[in-house]
Amino acid sequence: MRRRTHAWRGGALVTAAVAASLAAGCTAGPGTVEEDGQAPRPKRSHSAAGSPGPVLAVKVDNVPAARPQTGLEAADVVYVEPVEGGLSRLMAVYATDLPPSVGPVRSARESDLELLRQFDRPTLAFSGAHRRLLPLIDEAPLRAEPPGQEEASDAYVRDDDRPAPHNLYLRPRRLQPSPAGADALTTGFRYGPAPEGGEAESSRTVRYPSASFTFTWSESRDRWLVSLDGAPARTADGGRLAPSTVVVQHVNVRESDFHDVRGSNSPYVESVGSGQAEVLRDGRAYGAAWKRGAAADGTSFTTEDGTPLDFAEGQVWVVFADTAKRP
Image (cartoon, rainbow, N blue to C red; front, top):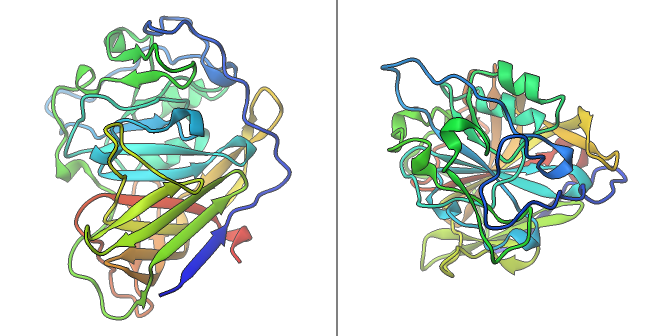
């Protein structure tokens, strides 16, 4: 068994933007300015009648003040994304289950739009976005549901016991009454028996400049136990976050056209293209190649000989790591 570390270091970045102080214990209303000087989206149209239900994607806070998060254990896929200041944010995608609550909910980023193109008009729940990003969200083929929108008026609540902005929670069934179903989860992922080969792996750590993620194999649970910044990642009821499959996906991380209020650039994760990855399942690590030919496509993972690489049944975490910073 051995321990490996992959680092995402980036350039000289300052801390994330100062959050706006919002009234605790109330639902954000129209015109509310969220963190980073960001504003909620205006109302968007729904998917056409009779079309399959959409997946629900929720932007989830991941700074220490936001932990333990609520509802992550019910997600089908959790994407880990770099944001300003070397920090991270999560995108939790729900297709087969809708938990009672998810959060804390935070703001969207430009690269979220490309990542979400793989789904058919997904619902995106987020606390706000940069003002210049709002037109791009408006044009994207998704259903945007920030607080303050008419149909989301009772979907968001504040937790009086937490400080803003780390206290906004979504009640998913107020946005859609039932899960979309597994058929809506068009990620391109395949599930099945483990491939031949691989290397025994007890623990894998991925580092951003100001955040780290460690996945430790548990034989008793047949899962990877998650630690965030060196501490066990707990669910709201005290359990451990424990996906069946972890993907370390090496991607190009470039500067976007957006900055926070302190001038820090927002990283843009290029999720369309191809590159290398490591897939962790069943206590083993498999070298893989990933490919996503177009934004509307899912992402395929193959072994060195080109054979499709199946994931273990259950939750998947995908951690985006900068190819340029790969050791």
